[in-house]
Amino acid sequence: MNDTAIFFLIFLSLAIGYLLGRLSSFSWTEKLWPREKAKFDQAEYIRGLNHLLNENADAAADILVSALEVSSETLHTHMALGALLRKQGDIGRAISIHQNLLSRPSLSLTQQQYAQLELGLDYMKAGVLDRAENVFLELKSSQDLTLQRRALEYLCDIYRDEKEWLSAIEAVDHLLDKKIVEDITLWRKVQAHHYCELGGVMLMQNDFISAQKAFSEALNYNKNCARASLELSGVYVMEGSYKESIRHLKKVPDQDADYIPEVLPRLVECYAKHGSVRELIRYLIALHDRYPSSSVLLSVVELVKSMDGSAAASNFLAEKLQSRPSLRVVGKFLTFQKDNSQEEKNRPEKVTELLLRHLVELKPYYRCNSCGFAGNQLYWLCPSCKSWESIRAVRGIDGE
Image (cartoon, rainbow, N blue to C red; front, side, top):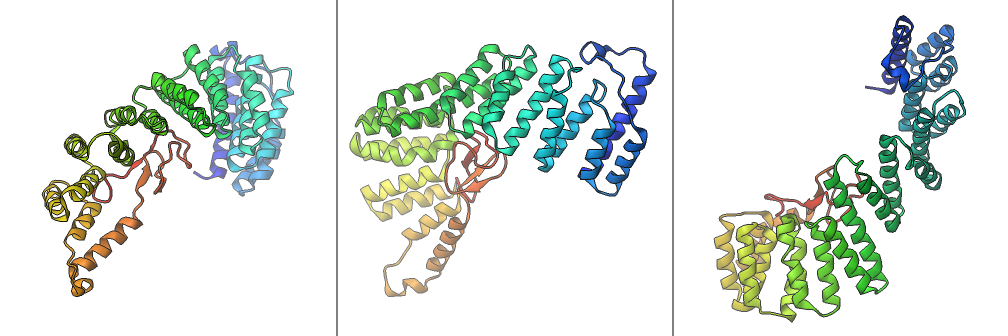
């Protein structure tokens, strides 16, 4: 539906509502939105609709707003129009509409606060985050629980974008303490990521103790936070505690199997410093049986090759390839079939290997389950849709 149609429906709804309101002597909504006589300039209203039909939305907005005096009956229409203008990118006019609503003493406190919320969203859209923050800070003490929740959620968005993690943590704690969130589990996961971000800041300051506390707190909010376990393992590696690092790395598969590929490089590093390669091979084979993964399989192959040579690695891979084929695994298998003779470059296997390698390089390794954003780098916060923990390794023939 285009913007002209949306404008038309908004004001058609207003006209119907206005007529029904005149016919009705009492409405249950009067307790929340007291009725007032709204001045309705019919000639200007029709002129505004004509502008809509001629796809002149800017002129239509100005005329329609002036044709409808602000009152309890027209408040929702003004707010809807302001929100639509904000969505279109006309922030200046949206701000004017919402500021105009706030200047009307006839509106109740709750009505003014809803208009204030819309103004805060205008400031957010405009990138004036300090003003938006001030608006939402004022609204978070509102008696209206819906207003409280929305204000706190928008504050979380601002603090996330500004990387003010302590403030973000405080806002989420307020949401959880008041029990006004719709999905407590979701917000506990968000809070875990806030603590992980805070721990990352502590690591950059070489404050390992505070970093450990932050990552541990993340696990208190979400025991299945694979990121916190990965981060804790990294702290222990920095401290030279490889056994402790391995313990945290082995938690990740059961917390979230999609992050197994992120565990493998550090796991190999830790076992090289503490433990044995044979022990690691046994663990990875068992892990692959529980959570089939191309990355795990290829890690085992490399370890087998380092211990027993290419022939043993090739035989192992050929056996596993039958049950879980993928471009990455097939490409690795072909590298073991190379002939070191001068004619190698002309062999069909060499050409196939090069083609497979090229195909794998062209495919993104990670994709966001929420918006489809794709790339070859893991982001805990999707750069596109701003969802936490939605980016995962691609699975199937092209990936894991």
